[in-house]
Amino acid sequence: MKNRKTFLMALLSILYFCIIVQGLNTFSNEQDDKDNKNIVPLLSASNSVAIEWNRTWGGSEREYGSGVAVDSLNNVYLAGITTRGPAGSYDMVLVKYNSSGVQQWNRTWGGSKEDSGRRVTVDSSDNVYLAGNTYSFGAGSLDMVLVKFDSSGVQQWNRTWGGSEWDVGNGVAVDSSDSVYLAGFTYSFGAGYEDLVLVKFGVEKREKEQAISGYDLLLFTCVIGVITAISLHKKYSK
Image 1 (cartoon, one colour):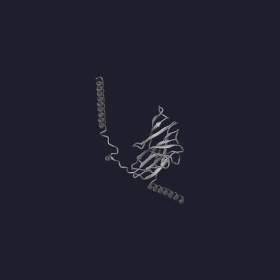
Image 2 (tube, helix red, strand yellow):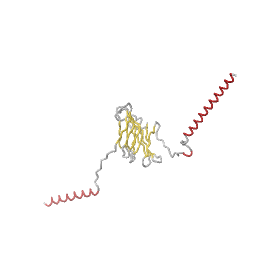
Image 3 (cartoon, rainbow, N blue to C red):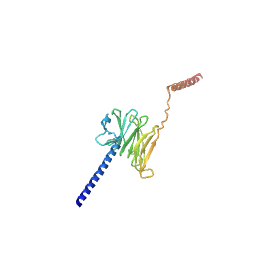
Image 4 (tube, helix red, strand yellow):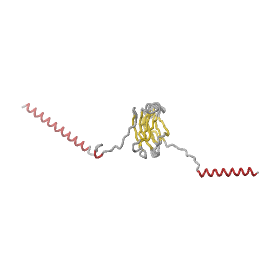
C-alpha cells in the first residue's frame, strides 16, 4: 500500500511538472510571436533587392574597402587600403566609379610606412575627402590624416593631426558650408588614457584673381597711345 501511494505521488509530481513546463513553453512561443509580428525577412520574395552590378579592385596582395560616398552626379567613391601602392607596404586608396560601375580613376596616397584609408565624403562642389591614418607623416607614431582631391582625382592638399602618441581617424563629414570634420580618438591629448577627438578644417580662403577685361585693356592701350603721341609732338615741335 505504501509503495502504491509513493508511486501515485511520484506520478502526480511528474504530471504537474509537465503541465507547468508546457505552459511556460506556450507562453514563451506566444510572446515571441507577438514580438516578431512586424519583422520582415530581409530577403523575402516580396521584398527582394536586385543587385545591379558589383566591382572588385585589387591585385595579387591584400586590399580592403572601408568607406563609400556618392557625389551629386551619382559617381561612387570607394576608400580603403592597398598593399600594392607605389610608396609603401600599405597605402590609402581611392577608386572612383560612375553610376554604371565603370571605373573613372584610382589614386593611392602614402609614404614608406603604413597608411590606411578609412572613410570618404564629398562636398558641394564634388571635391573628395579621404580620411584615415598615417605612420609615414605627421608628429607621432600614428596620426590622423585628411587628403583632398578634386573630382578629376587631382590632389589639392593633405593635412595630418596628432601628437607623440597614437591618434586615429575613423570618420569624416562635411557641413553645409563645406567645412570638414575629422573624427577619431587620441592617446596624445585629452583627460584620459584614450579620448574622443573632433578636428574641424575650415573652408579654404581663395585670393581673388585680378583680371583685366578686354575693354579695360583697350582703354589702357588708348591712353598710353595718346600720352605717347603728345610726348612725341612736344619733342619734335621744339
